[in-house]
Length: 148
Image (cartoon, rainbow, N blue to C red; front, top):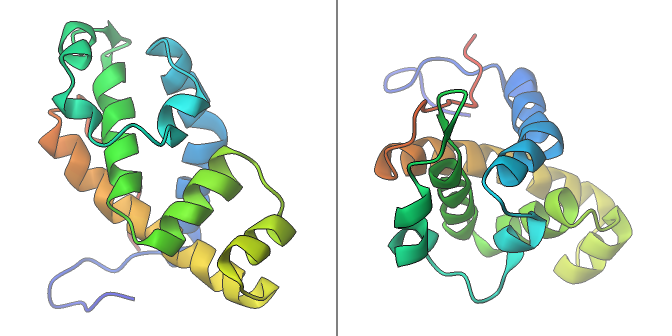
C-alpha cells in the first residue's frame, strides 16, 4: 500500500482489524466517557468540533490518562477529512450500523466495490486519526496502524 522508502511496512490485515475494533469497541467508551453519543459524530451541523468554546471547557477531562473529549473531537475531524465515500462508509456502516445493502444503495456500488471502499476508508481514517490527535494535543496519541 505504501512505499518502503518513506514508511515502515504496515500489516494491512492487522491494521484493518485494529481500526474496525476502534469503531466497534473503543469509540462507544470514549463517547460515554466524554458525555457524548454516536449522534455527536454524525451530526450534520458539526464542522470542526475543536473550534467550539464548549470543547475547551471539557478538554481537560482526563479519564485513565486519556483526554477523552479531545480524542472524540479528533475522531470526528478525522472522519470529516476523509473522502466522501469513506465518510459514507465510516458514518453509516461503522457508526450508524446500516446494512451493507443500504451502503451499496447510498454509493450506487456493488458489494465487492463497497468492500474495497471499506478497506480504503479504514486506512484513510487511520492516517487522518493519527494526524488529528497530534493537532488536538490528545494524550496519548494512538496509532491505529500495525507495523510488520
